[in-house]
Amino acid sequence: MKNQIFFALTLAAMLLVSCRESTQDKTKDAVEAIGEDIEDNARKAGEKLKDGAKKVEEEIDEEIHETDDINGEEASEDF
Image 1: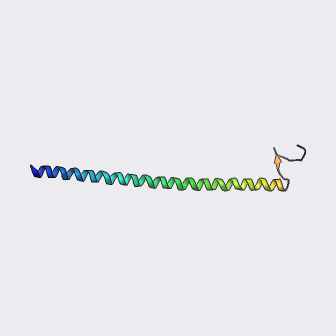
Image 2: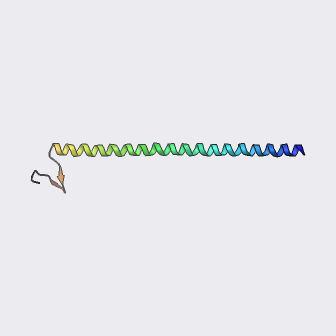
Image 3: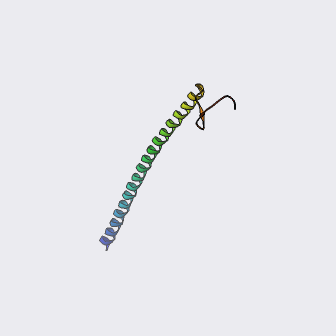
């Protein structure tokens, strides 16, 4: 009887440890996936910032050189 109880407790402990390890593995995988998503989105945001900065630079250059256009027509000071 003592052997059966010991065996049952040992089996329960092994199952508990096994479940903890699988939970840890799943958590680790989820954290890695989140990290990859953060890296991808940061890269995309950086690209959008560069594109936006380039557009701003072009607009400033057009204003400085008075080559800005509105609806395909060159802007004038007559507004």
